[in-house]
Length: 257
Image (tube, rainbow, N blue to C red):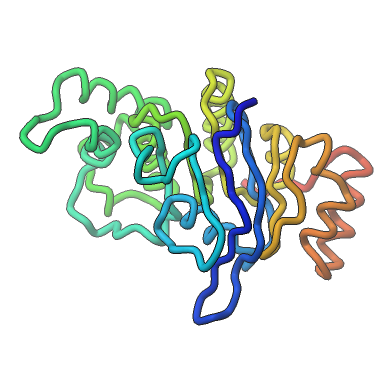
């Protein structure tokens, strides 16, 4: 249960307008953690700040007790699909191999073992058959699966994923969530921005409830409650009523296929 991630008094602002303020929580190792909150809650900003892509206006982030630059080899990141230049001339195999890039020296070529590792990761997300295809020729869901394969290829200790299931069909999402659960069971720690409350309830065991400030962070049985979810989503009454009814029936709303 040693803390993998420590965030203390984190404040982030765009054009002097706070997006996150006074966010303070720890994440223990070996957990599958869902970041849950409404649109505009600062979920992506939180992930990017943890990765060092955004400089905070206050507070700090520590991973494995160190600054992120000191432990990048132990971290894998899946960005939002919209933030990637999908016209970049690379094949599916090229992208998967990028997960091994900083483990290679500049003058080294990828070995047969590296390529086999990349193939195995593509196979896990159902994209091995597309290995030679250009990423620009893929659908949105397929592109997202390729980036998941790239993250898997890193064989990291800590995975950060920003809406990794956007554009992915429900059956593929389920198979990948089960894969991520197996990674968690093997001691990996995963921090995932996620929107579907039913799959969150089924697969995640720890939650960060966020709406510009931290609403709650902790084990599912402690924080994934009607009261805390209502506090997280604020005045969105129709959504809250739907969630409340679903919680009372122990059946959360699911996304469409």
